[in-house]
Length: 61
Image (tube, helix red, strand yellow):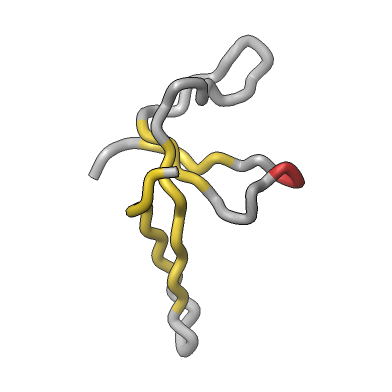
């Protein structure tokens, strides 16, 4: 496993969540430093019976 964080772009989202490699570092105004970091699309799978959720980041974007 490697460290990373989920990018939250709110209303400006492209329709899918992205995982960004590396530890979260905050900029001067408190936002995450993301420039130049690789990103992967997050795919989510949920168990219909119990609601367990798993996230996978397999596809670079």
